[in-house]
Amino acid sequence: MQIDLAIGRHPQQAYRYLQSLCLTDIDFLPVVIRDAQGKLSAESLTGEVWGNFLSAVFDLWVREDIDRISVSLFDSTLSIWRGISSVAVAPEMAFAKCFCCEQRRFCMGCSTINDPILCSGYRRFFTYSAPYMRVMRDLIKQHRSPGELMAMLS
Image (cartoon, rainbow, N blue to C red):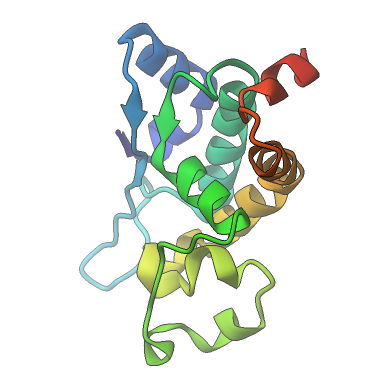
């Protein structure tokens, strides 16, 4: 699903809509729109809205759908928490500020995930989801379903 500014401002409604379609796999694609001069357009997704969107959707997913719906970003993040990295980038492709970022292990630099304007949003999501990711990782290490987290949160 493409996430522009309008959809990004309504994460719960967007996720509920996708749930109603009985989807089992979801990928959120951020839409960054620039004008001819390279400046962000008024309709463009911002880092703040993107981070809020991801965190709000994650909050619903982690309580309701861990075992039912695969959200690619959430699955990839959990894989990295488990030590299974699916993201690779040549060091010269990462932005200089990324080398100091404590969330870099999840995206390996903004150039690999999208426009750097969204970096703050990804950082917000990775920080917000960290406690839940730790629990799911630990459940998997114990040969248990990460879906058990849903019962812990209810």
